[in-house]
Amino acid sequence: MLNFEEEVKKFHPSLEIEDAEDAIYNSHVSDITDILVEMLNEIRGTK
Image: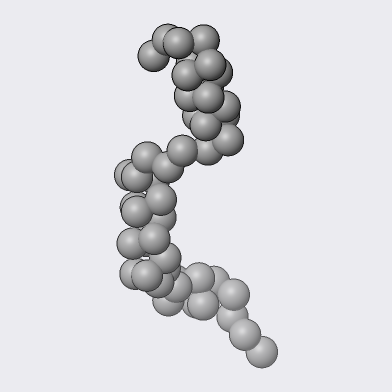
């Protein structure tokens, strides 16, 4: 039978996941709201 407490102590997150998380949180990716605001500003002639 597995000892849950011992397994939790041995757990270490994957470095790949941590790297992906950093890349996601530290990059600026336009979402649909950003795109719509930009389109409306272009239509209105403002920036």
